[in-house]
Image (tube, rainbow, N blue to C red; front, side, top):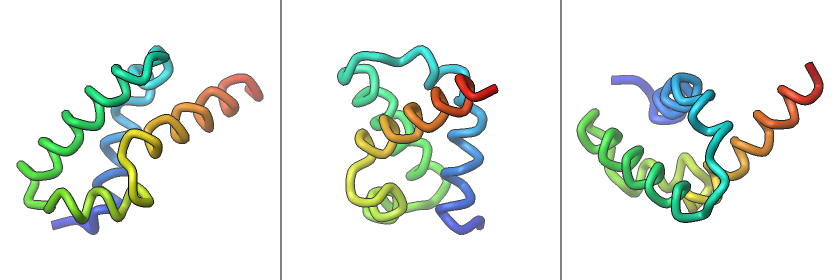
Length: 75
């Protein structure tokens, strides 16, 4: 099994395009729920995912989206 941080990085890289189109907080909440379910299916506990996300999955996804938007703008 991968370290959860590596698993999370891979999952977010696969969703890079989807995250670019998410604007509403409810959409981030839905994505956080899907990510939580995928983590559990992969054998990670919800607490492990929350910890890997710095305490809040939704906020983490928003931050990742902002960084991705900045990277795209810089290119």
